[in-house]
Length: 292
Image 1: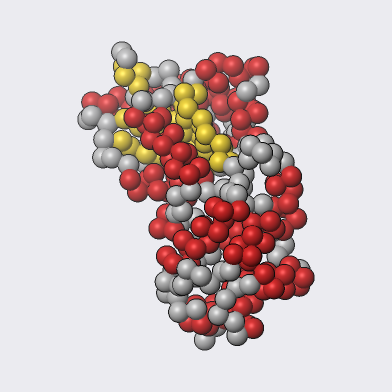
Image 2: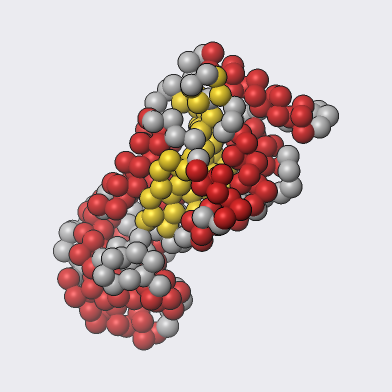
């Protein structure tokens, strides 16, 4: 029996509550995540050309996207593009591949674009519209973003055939707001920034995940939750890292609860590598507004 099995059995859980893999089944609907998802839905319903969702690494953006993919209506075709890069034409190939469209044999960019336009028109004739979700969009070049803007010019009268959802880290907002991308920014109809969780939300988040995994809601004592918040910056992925280590330590100590002493032990042993990174993220956020 390995350590992970022992700790789940020790706390009478079905599974680990604090994995690092995005899992829509464990999605915690904080007030901020509810608003972010509402903005995503708003962008889709209003046929916004471009919707923008930003947040720190590990803030829960990808989990929201996966939840959207599970709940999208049948009249919408979704193409998910992760970390697309490349010169002119490469982005279009990424997008077309995300929708399951063949790009082999295209003679040039005009031919490739004609195929893409034909796909969108075919979708529209079938009563569907296409939405491309671009994850890690902060890595895209100015030329890539301009190419995306040109894609949104494809329309039929007043109906949008193609919409874009950009998901990325905070610097994506700064990129979009550059003067030389003003035309692109004008196409952004909705934007939401996912900031870090406060202390109260971290405690509710930890309880939610523990109970979802089959454990007791009071395994983490309030003081322990406060320490997890303070040393994780309130970023969900980093909270998961620290909370998971705390459960391993509580098991090793033979304890049924994670206490402030448990968290301190983890910190003192130096096994929590994400701590310094989380501290940097926390210092970049205003303690009053919770925004960068």
